[in-house]
Figure (cartoon, helix red, strand yellow):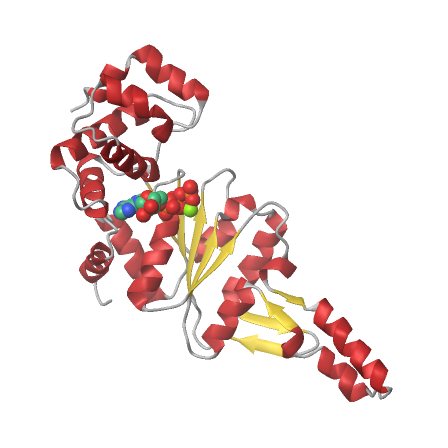
Length: 292
Ligand SMILES: Nc1ncnc2c1ncn2[C@@H]1O[C@H](COP(=O)(O)OP(=O)(O)OP(=O)(O)O)[C@@H](O)[C@H]1O
Ligand SMILES: [Mg+2]
């Protein structure tokens, strides 16, 4: 993709409605060979950027889902102990436990590559993958420190085997829901982009793009209601995922228009906290329905 416009078009072809600033960030990340760091609230389309980017580039998507307690072993590689034990038993049974055979057990064949090693190996073979490091804010800071090191040289040293180095770094997309701040040192390496909730027009476009037979008027009503809901200082404001779920739910129920009754019936599709549902019911569902 040789321009920002080309990025935006390629994304639109795959039903991702990006605003220009996201297009610029994606383009720069690709051109400068830097990781793309996407931060934003839940359900605004961060993970989808990596999926779409892999599809656009025709690359393999390798995903590392972060969680509390994720350690380097789970992210990089693990030895296949079960197979190693089996191999040792066979060697013992044959009664020929030579050094050469023991060394075989510590070879690549007995390694289970996890996402980071998979990405480095693919890149070392010249197949440049898209590496998605999803929800990095959930991982611990030690893991982040390791990642910083990896991102600087894209090589992995396995003591028993040697060093594997990527010829060209993988395309890296990092996402965070900002439940905590990611260190400056890591962010400095990346192209940073805050993924915001879409504005009214873009949200209408997202609905009509993703759900082709969607009535334009209903799409506009839903988008307007979403803007209202997000202005209410809810505990958990709904993202684009909820917008699309809502549109699909209304279609299943055969609702042609968004009125107080249909809002009340379907609030559970959009809001996932009792306090938020109560807040809207107190305010009056007609206030949400009457946004447009
Ligand atoms: N700009 C967009 N164009 C088209 N679809 C979108 C857009 N933004 C979000 N979506 C859709 O919304 C849904 C949620 O997106 P996604 O899972 O990427 O959100 P997220 O930011 O990663 O959320 P979370 O923080 O919960 O992981 C997906 O189905 C995605 O296709
Ligand atoms: Mg996500």
